[in-house]
Length: 517
Image (cartoon, rainbow, N blue to C red; front, side, top):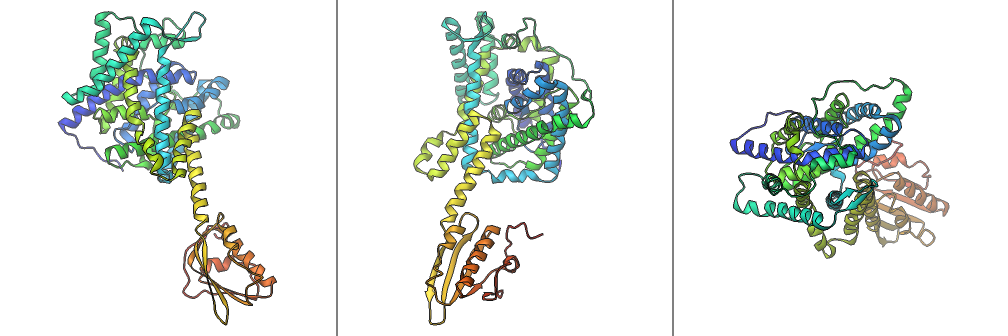
C-alpha cells in the first residue's frame, strides 16, 4: 500500500517552493477557521501542521493539502460552546476511527457514485465560497466592535495590492516557471509594503482584530501529547458520537471530492481508500495533540498544484514550513499583507470555477444543468456535504424518472394467445407504466408476458408482476410469465395455478430485495 516516492532534482525544487507558498496561505485560513470553531488560533495552526503532515505521508493523493477547514469548523461550534474544547478533541478520536474504518472497508470507492454535474457544482460552489470568504478581509472592526468596509485610501491601497499580486501570478509564468509565481507575488508585495511603508492590513492585524486581543501573536511552541480531558462515560459518548459521525462524513466527502478534482487536473489517479485512512490517522493524531482536526482543502490544494507541487514532499514541506513559522519566524509571517494572500486566493477562485458551465446551458440536458446549479447554490447556502448529498439524490431521482419512461411492450396476437414482449427496466419508478401496458379486460383467455428484453430490478417490480398475475387470475384467464430469473420465481408468492412461470433459458440477474439473504 505504501510505496517510497521517486525524487528528481526538478520535482524536489518544485515541491519545496510550492510547499513554502502553501504554508504562507495556510496561516490566515487556519486562524480564521479556529475563530469560526471558537477555539484558540494555535489550535487551528496545529491542525494545519498535523493534518498536512500526516496526510502528505499516509494519504492517497500526492500534492493534496489538508488542514483546518470551514466545512468542519462550523460543525464544531456548538460542541465547543456547550461542552468545551476537550470534548472536541474527544470527538476527533471517533472521527479518526470512523474514517480509518471507511478506508479499511474500502468505502472510498463510493465517491464514484457522484455524477459529473454534481462535481461541477461542487467546484463552482467552493470557488464562490472561497471568493466570499476573501471579502471579509476588506472589513475592519470599528470602535463599537462591529465590522465595517474599508473606505478611501485604505480601500484603494488594498485593491491595488490585490491587483498587483494577481498580475504577478498571471504574467510571471510567461517569463519563467523556475519559481512559483504565487511565492514571488507574496514576497514582492510584502517587500513593497515594507519598503514604501504602506498603510495596509497585515496578517497580525487580522489575528488581533479577529481575536480582540491587541497582544495576540502567531508565535507558539511544539504541540504536546495529551489525551482528551473528558470523563469516560456513556454520557460523554452520547454527546460526542453524533459530532464524530458528521465530522467524519463531511471530512471524507470534501477530501474525496478534492482528490477527484486534482485527479482530473493532473491526469493521474489517487487512492480513495488510502486517503480515508490518512484522514483518519490525521484526525486521530490531532485529538491527542490539541488540534482541531480537518480535512482536504481545495483552495490550498489548487495553489499547490498550480505552483508545481505534485509529490508528497510538497505537503510535507508546507506542514514543516508552517511549524517553522510558528516556532521561529512568526514575526516575519505577521508582516505579510493580507492583500497578497487575498490576491493569491482570487487567482485560485478563477482557476477553480468551471467557466465552461455557461456554455453547457445549450449543450447538456436541462436536468444535468439543473444539478450543477442546485449543488452550487446549496454549497454556498449551507455546506458541501449537504450539497453533494442533495445533488446525488436529485440525480438519482432524475435517472429513475427518465428510465421509468423507457418501459414498453410489443404486442402480438395469434389464434392461441396474446403475447406482450416487455422491453426496459422494471423498478419502483416504472411499475405504474408497466401495469398500464396491459388490457386485462379485453385480453383473450390465454396471455403470455415475455421478459426476455426486460430486467426486473427490485422488489417493487416483483410486487407489480404479482399484482398483474392477480388481475388475470381474478379475471379467470391463464397467464404465462416467460424468461424470468429463478430468483424472481422464488419471490412470486401469490401466483395461482393459472399462472405459469417458465424457467428455461432464463436470465440469472439478481433482484434488489430484502427477502433474499
